[in-house]
Image (cartoon, rainbow, N blue to C red):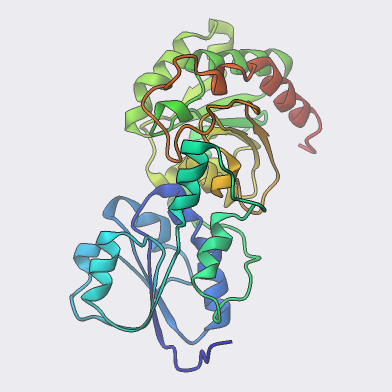
Length: 336
């Protein structure tokens, strides 16, 4: 193990995006345990500052523009490892620099040639930890987010009391990671017909129109038990809403990992994504819905704006009835 007694200041860098940042939080917890005397700062892009600002093991959170050139740190942990983060690091006085090795060549071989060199599944959380060999030997901590009392109050008022709550995170940055909206509507109808569950739709401002389409596709008798909060909650208000849900249905998106911070039971839909890339939920119970055996899957490691083959079977072959039946079963067996 590296001598940690001399480490008094640490800067962790992960500039984007939501899921990737949330997946750094187990490492932050382990780093604090390993070097309790050290001040841990975090650098991320401005829209994501709130994800870390209330974390008790993080002293300060900065955007890249807020870090003064020449700032001194005993240890810099670059979990972004791109041109911008390396430039940022060069302008610091860093005693030791550790970097996350993305191994994008493995992703490229899997996407382009179908050569899968991921022999054993390893989460991105574990791959982050590789950058801190000698400081952190393993990661057992879960993801962690800390909504404020005001944010929790917002969630309590928005959801209210009553029947179990199913949170549906229907958005994603790329088309091939989005389960079709009409199928989400079908799932909601089936679940609400079989159970008294209430449904909340979560997403950003960019998801408002899609949420309206889901609502419009529902029968009126079902629609009155569904509440769209897309575009109506901040990032950490969304975290608070997820903390109050009984279970969460989501695409491969950042809200998936936010939900995992609260130990929610997750129902996860992967289209063009595959688990080998390391982004399955960390430290929580989940059920994965995917179409196995497609030669064209994965077609990208980040997602595409359209299906290259035109059939979109990776999503369309996942029956909404199958997902709904598993949600109904989980709700019926819930202690609540």
